[in-house]
Length: 333
Image 1 (spheres, rainbow, N blue to C red):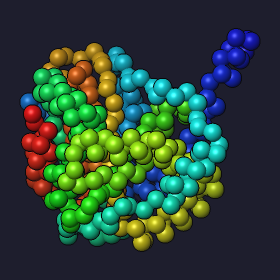
Image 2: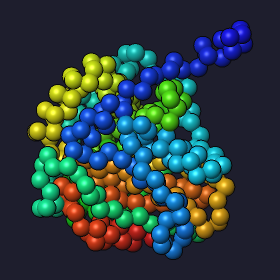
Image 3: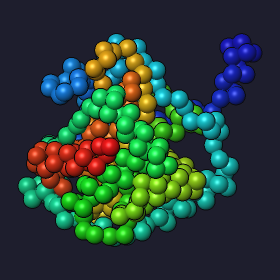
């Protein structure tokens, strides 16, 4: 290695070995189905042009979509990395870790929907889902509506999801806790680059409020560095080895039930070499503690939205399709 190359390596973030995949390997062994599905699809629906399942043990959503596009031979431009190029101070990270460990949902979660055909501990073999690709024109109207209320697109969509789908799933409460993945790439460099490099931070989202209030809740969680706290919590747990991590996860599963309503993931804004009527839909990984998973991907200006449910919530695709219709009706300008 020459001096210039040595300088470049030293200046970048220290590589982080891929430890998080172990968590999803263990969940698979316990009977969960920790796989993403990515589809290349056309406006108007119909059978996807291409689809692939990618194990969460190997990749997070960002890495999985990257792998999918490369497999399909599609030239693409990925979302920009985070502007922060260095981690917070050690003291700040310790404080964030403490906040994550101590975090409890602001309101208790009582589910009213349940999948009677599934019993705890049974192998997950079905995860009903629904997806929709919006046209560039319809997507632009959603983007404009979000700007008009002073919210990010993520906040706008999460607000609509909370106001339409959550009432069908959970009893009334002042708020509901979502897990929101944050791509840590930029200040973190994971090896390999398509591996898990996302941190799911807890966000207490008010119910019956405004999209701007959801925007504020997301901003507050980020300002508190909850994504760093969760990143350090899981990486620290993984350092103790597979046996210790499996014991910890098993104890948690025996007592947790649904800890959060689910996960809401914005995989980002992507551009690529596809026909004008083609877009991408990603289906996430619902688990017993996070029984619903909502995903948004923007591909060449077109929003791809999806819902996927854990069988502890429902095993009926028609139910999830109704939730998707209600979500779309809410965001339609």
